[in-house]
Structure formats: C-alpha cells, structure tokens
Length: 128
Image (cartoon, rainbow, N blue to C red; front, side, top):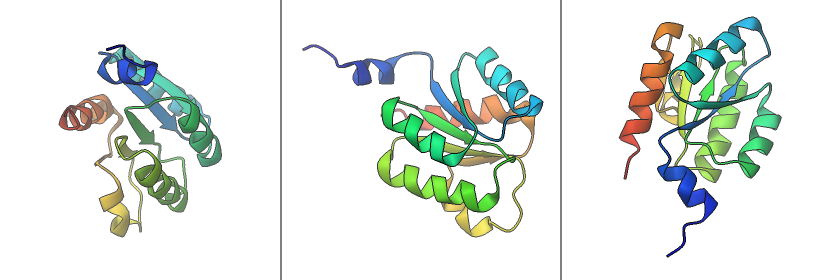
C-alpha cells in the first residue's frame, strides 16, 4: 500500500514544529535552539498566520512563545485542539492569569534551556 505524503511525514524522524510568536532576536534564538535539537521549525508571527500555515502543512507540535498575549495563546490553542487534535501544544514562558487554560496545553516550559527537551518529551508521549 502506498503512503500519502501526510502519512510519510508522520513517521519521519524529524519533527515538524510551528513556533508562534512576535518577531524578535529571542524568537530567532528559540528557533535555532529547536533546529539544533533536530526539529524542522516554521515560524509564524501571529495567530492568524499560524492557523493558515497549519491548514497547508503538517505539524507534530506547536510552541506558543511568551511574546503572544495570553488570550491569543488560548484562542489559537482552542482552534488547534479542534482542527488538529494530534498536534502537541507547548507554552513557553510564564503567562500570568491564564491558569484555567492549562488543560489546552500538553506542557509549559518557563526556561528556554528546557524547551527542546520538554517538546521532545511531549512528542514522545504522542506515539501511537
């Protein structure tokens, strides 16, 4: 049986990650950090673009940068949970006042140094 491109992407060793955050040197640093950990990272600078990119590309996971306002993180997470339920969602940084939304995210990582390891662990739990 021939595999589709989408199926082939799912079994690939390199994980496709969507990194969502306001453009900045810090976001570029996080992108390089994830890439050096063996991940294929696509950046989106806002939640509208993130949703549009997700419609056309397969992602194993998404990282929400702390440069996004908390309400935008929650809004995008709600959409992604419905439209792409396999996608693992990780919140980077500390977001005050949104504790009630923690069930939307598979993990939170307050430190940049632990971001790649947290994402790897979340993706490993997703294996079927």
